[in-house]
Image 1 (cartoon, rainbow, N blue to C red):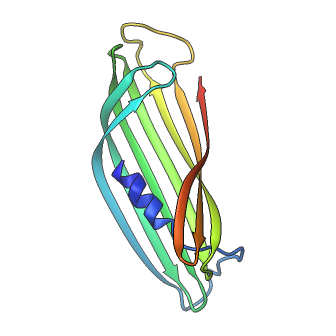
Image 2: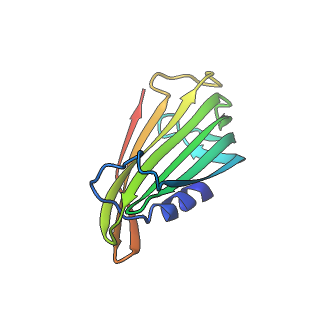
Length: 160
């Protein structure tokens, strides 16, 4: 999905283990938000259905700069509905990711947590237990001298 590529590119900000100071009078915040309806096509690992539909996506990017640091926050939230093939079952789709980076450095490693849910809301032509899919993915971003490298570190998938 294009939003995932944008999100990965935006994660190239270095981090340090210092707390952000919201009381700094020099803080300047800029916020950008994109809202759009997007098409999704997901294969359910739980039911083997090819689920297609539309979701409303809200992607928010907030950058706050102070005298010494930059804080960069992003969130990406998608919610929608779709239909499975071949079962013709109805599904609810949800995906959410959130990330915050505080930086002054050129080199860093960071891990992001992304969650995706594909919930079967009707039985369709067949019904089974454990037909709701829950995915949690951890992505590692490493920046060396300002050059980012993003890899999927671990994926957990469960049918409930």
